[in-house]
Image 1: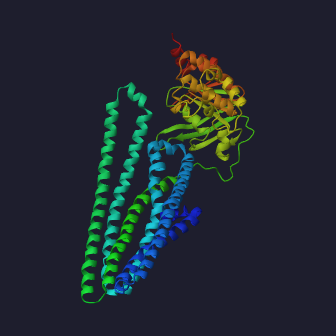
Image 2 (image 1 turned 90 degrees about the vertical axis):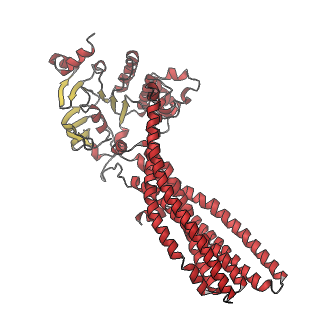
Image 3 (image 1 turned 180 degrees about the horizontal axis):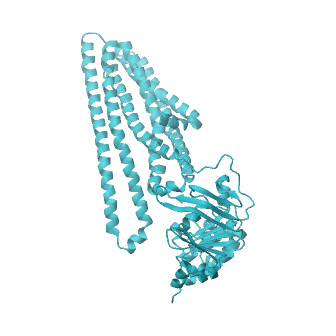
Length: 572
């Protein structure tokens, strides 16, 4: 019931349209109930009296009613669907905004394809429920009550015989709904797995081609497809049982009306006109039952999708402390004070880690993989929260400031540069709000990418492709550097920013990074030690914590891990 109340809350902005939709549904129902009554009158009174005038008047009345019914059906189909589409859009906006606020740990544990399935696929069924669900339920109730009242006026006993059939149909529908619920939930879960598999395979299509692994990908996709087919088959089997048995019960109901009504007519309990009206009412009576069946099916599909929607909406998002204040006037001093951290249930990555970086200075983190260097880079902008200790900027704990103000003061250039499937202009200006062309070009020039951009046919309006596939690694790095120049943060994080580049490109990018680092507090993570020689301090980290620290000259004199790594890289 809680999920139903949350679902109904989305009707609030559209109550006027919803009320008109229900009013039109009521009009359609009344029109459907009038026809059998008029039919009985014509057969019992107008035809025996040969009253052609009244028959023609009735015909005109019915034409007028049918025109009104057409207009009301048009409103239901047009504006009712528009309302449902707007509700779906509201849910989709809420869901997307919520996902944007979820912590990194959520994306570590959930597949992108599955999230896409929830944003797009699940809400389509919710849209159908939003429009047709209340309408079908309302029409079913009105038609059932209305037909019962009108039929009871003719003959209460025949009416009770017909309506006694309803409990059997309702019990059957409720039983099948429970069965379908399980199967449809399983089907949605498998559909999300298919979407995740497709997203993963298409993203890695270049690797697939490079390793000639098409057969492997086809086999993997065939495996998840077979699972979906099996689950879908069970869901369709339950649905087939539901529909076939429902149709059989409707046929039996019509037979009961025919036999019972015929007997009542033979024994003068009802007139031929009433008998004809009862036969028509039997068809009218089938319509609300069908609508109830459709409602149950729509409710099942829609609510299973809405429950999956709610499961994401109920996932806690990143939040600021109630007393959190904006981080302003940053000088750039960074201090780790006895920091401990682990990812989920993994072993502890950082244990009682402490170091300090003075404003405007550069700290380099080097050492074997697994020592926590990238983790430190993720902790500073609070992509992950620490378990123990504290991280401060200018003496202020980063947990005591707002996330938006903290991250606005940190610029990041990583090894795996992500560019959006848009233009170079959009990617450089991303996150900087309204930026003039002069500011954008100045940032591109400082990143040494402007001259190349001007050689392209569309210049800054050139599309970079998905993940920037149309640009080389060095060009993507320069676009990312220009993006940070435009952001102009006081703190800079360079996480393996040049490790994927060739030596010549690395030297060119390094010059851009050196300019970018001027006057900023910079943390550099690098395996290529040639890029950290100029750092004010170098910390050598292993999985046991900090092993060595000092500048390049001091660490070379110590003759420890750093010297060994340095000489190994430059042994030639």
